[in-house]
Length: 402
Image (cartoon, rainbow, N blue to C red; front, top):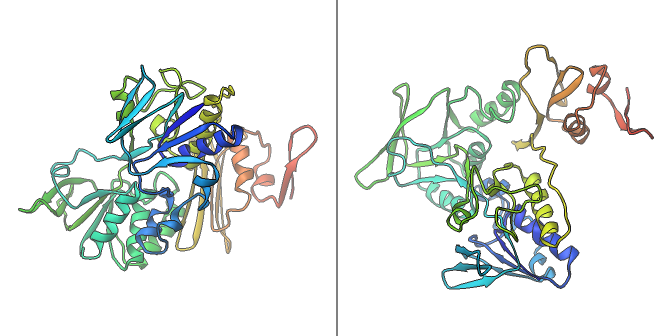
């Protein structure tokens, strides 16, 4: 059987690995627009020079050859011929028996006056983005980052490592507002400020100004503040890269529409990862790739583990992890603890933990994820919050020692 995989991110690689593990002789063809296989989570380390291209790869150096994968880099698929079961690209085509679309996502460019016509404006989502930003940053004196989420702070961290002092703008009143509470995020904000980063929080970009050459020269904020800018990085979210599927007649809504087996609206075509719009987390992309691959092999497997409310962050050697909700609602029991080891916050709702933040000491995070994911009832929160050990008894009940 011939399997064609479009995309070489977490979902595509997981699918290839799963196919090979279950079928040593099936043909695997991977087509990717990228020039190498890399982790988006490490792009900031590439920008800052802490790692080279090989250092941001998330597969063993012999993965492609060991798994007998026919890979073609820098190949952008232009059409999927559903009737003839063929994918087409600029200088060739490939037939398939089963096809996986794992094209991922791209940086979202908001509708800001002057933004889309300005040059020296880049997202940070691909290795090519990181390469361009690194090269442009060398001579840039006024770098502005739009977005103080994880991607925006990754960009800031990489630039700081280069010796730059960027300015970060965000509508939220704290950084990493979708990942951490105000206290945990303030720890990072202080570290970034110590390193020279400036913040304009609670502010919206109203306009982007360009010079005669078309290059961005300034960013205007909604309060009238004008920021000089010769390099603008957009970190305002992502959007599904589903154009190929849409043009080929495959059903697309928020992303490529799939069923519980990750099959698209067209038989023998599957999809996994960011392009489906199901989740934006690495673990979920891997699980989707594995599940899609099993179904491509005829091993009926449902994708039903959609829990994705987990964020892991590490800047300046301070690890943080949030699982579930981190903003309590009326009636919730919230407990916070600060110690020499760091910060811990837990939220209990009707006897069930719904969220936790761990900063500094992130041990026992797997335990918390299982409690939150499986909505385990806990009669006494304190017995769990600061437990020393845990396990399951013969009846499957959670147990712990105080």
